[in-house]
Image 1 (cartoon, rainbow, N blue to C red):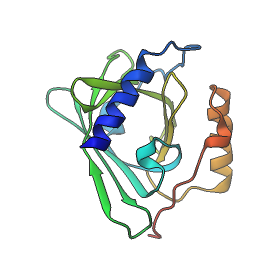
Image 2 (cartoon, rainbow, N blue to C red):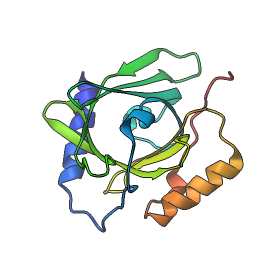
Image 3 (spheres, helix red, strand yellow):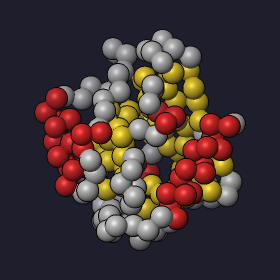
Length: 173
C-alpha cells in the first residue's frame, strides 16, 4: 500500500508541474481493439518497475466507460515473486480516446497518453506530458533489436531522453 501511495503522490506532483511543450496523442483509439494484453517491451520505468521482469499490462473496458487495468510482473527475476496492481483508467478525451487518467489511489490520476499506435493494434507507446516515464508495449513479448531502435528514435523525437529506455526481460514462450 505504501508503494501505491508513493506512486500516486509522484504522479500527482508531476501532473501539477508545468509542461515544457504539448505532447500529441494519436488521432483516434478504438477502445475495444485496444483492450487486452500488452507486454511492456521497453520502458523508462517508475521506481516500481525498476526491477520488473515479465511486465504485462492488461485492459478491459468496464460498462461505465472506465478501464479496468491489471499490471503484473515478477519482482527481481524471471521467477521472482509475482506482483499485481489494479489501477483504473479514465478516458479524458472522448473525441480521440487517446488521453487517459490512470488512478492507482483515489483521488489521484496520473497522465497517460497514447502517443503511438500501429494500424494493427500490435505496438503502442504510452507517454506522459512531463516526459519522465514512457512505456513501449506490444501484443507479443518478442521485440527485435530493429524495433527497439525504431521506438527509441520515436521516443527521442517526442522529447524523451532515449538513453534512459530499458528493455525488460520476458520469459521464453
